[in-house]
Amino acid sequence: RANVWLYLFLSTTTTTLTLSTTQTPLTPLRTFLLFLTSLLTLLSFLVAFSFRHKTLRNKLTKRISPCYNARGMVSGRGGMMNHTWEAYVALGMGALWAMVAMTVWSRWEEIEENAGLDGVVWSPDADGTADEGHTNGGVSTVGNGNLYYSTSVSALMIAYLVSDLLTIDDPNGTLPLYYRPRNQIQLSYSLLFYSSIALFAFGTSHMSSDICSSSTSSSDNASFPSCRYSILTVLLAGWNVAVVGLHLGLVSVERNDPHPMPNPRTRKRRCVVDAWLSLSALAAATINVGVSTSEHGPGREPGNVFWGCWICFAIATYLMMSHVE
Image 1 (cartoon, rainbow, N blue to C red):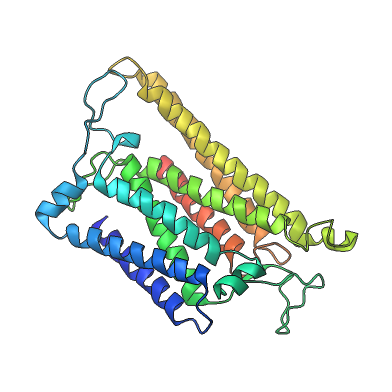
Image 2: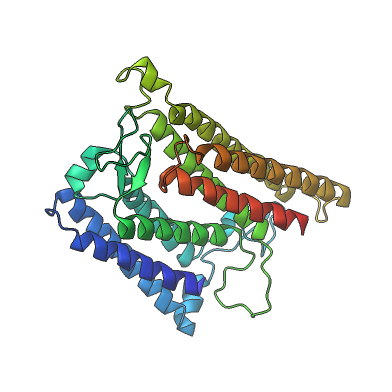
């Protein structure tokens, strides 16, 4: 995670510089976003620096309180029990960066006008014709590339850090080069949850847009192909969220097992169920990519839905490969 914190510092720095050099008036909302990004840039730098110092690293990654399992014994297992300063910083940064990301990813014109931002440009023309003369079918497209992609990369790295800290066996920062973490599956499910929630929100946002709203558009506009496809986007993203919930239920049952050694048959059964869950998640993500990013889908242009579909597909593919291995 030491290098991830360093990369996070670089990406948040890019976001801060882009916000500060945007050629628009400095509005209160943009000033608040600059404050948040500057604060998070400083925090990521301090954590990245602490990982390079032995004493600071030990304090940063040392558990604040003992971890107990269901049998009341001190446990070295990860999960929600990794109470470290690094975990608290990552969770706090995740909450604050979500505010930044939701503003940059927003398609609403009032956000752009009030904040002086153009991270995502929304074209609600029913005939699919944008002002610049190109057709995008009323889907979101990226306006300011530096702002949009640096914000998105930072969000992905924070999600990775939070997921790793919640699932790693040992939260200490230094591990041998040959060490192979045992939390790949748990980490993948956690990342799939975050990305599916985001994709669910993006699809819902498209469904509630002016072009898809029956109250503000004609019947022809309400039946626009991207509006119909966005319903499938939301349903498939919701299914992947449910898959993660089922997996967490299986993990909770295993961890609360009072027997010190779980039954091998029970463990094998759980692995089989997990494999089928990952297969269903991959199938849903594949359909989402094929439909939502098609010619008439809500993610036909590189934007929120487009990248959300492909990120979910990549995570689901890695998850399935981990189960096969």
